[in-house]
Length: 329
Image 1: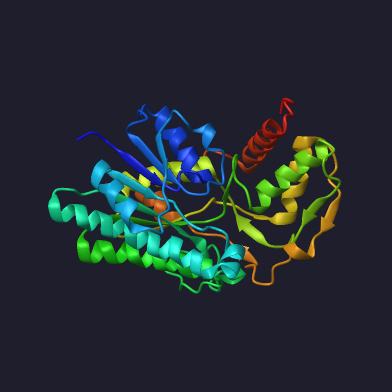
Image 2: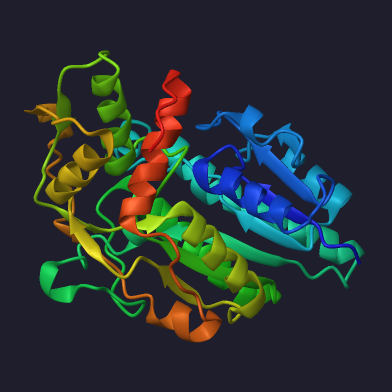
């Protein structure tokens, strides 16, 4: 059977980089199927590398139709409402997208298996470090997969739902699932996280379009992974992971957010005036988000290839290109 990879949420940072990676590995556009809805990246950057279509996973019929028509051999379920702050504003939408959308995917697989009992896809579900929530205390990090799941916002709750659904469909239906608990990940194309926002703002300052770098709490600490290392981990788990198991995906170092600013200043070559923005001071922010990826490493042999310095440089380069600046890094 020809390998066919289906990526839900292909219009996000992770999905778009997964398309890039699979295309480089020699998969043809008809072997890489991607669906998106309200993409956060520029879909034009991956056109021609995959078979792309718009699909809102909150509705079951189009999900069932696609799974029946394509019968993908591996599914990377990345589609999500992925912003904790948005989840407070739109909790119902968050649950519909993240939880109900996951049910639609697994029920579509069940439906096909009733007709074709030999259909046996691998499903890697993008779960989140947000599931750990209140367990992420300085004395308890780096947190491992045995930590209690105590989410602190609707987004985290929705990710617990996705995680347990993936376990349940494996335990009861025998679907080959992997639960990938993803920690802070960034890089080119990312929007809405601290490093990418800092990088984008730094380019705006460099270009004369902004005067200050708006910041929130600079004392929080985050384990940061480059998106390309994350994609590598997800691909390894799809072939080497234990079905039904959960795996933390997190870089081996945690960084104080304030320490990222001098690294960015070194790349852009100018000082960045700092302005504390009260809107960015979030009382529910975990003081530290840092995971133990030992289980992933021992099972798959995963290694990080991108340093934080390389991630910062590549992210700044990306935003320079987007803004029309073509300076050499």
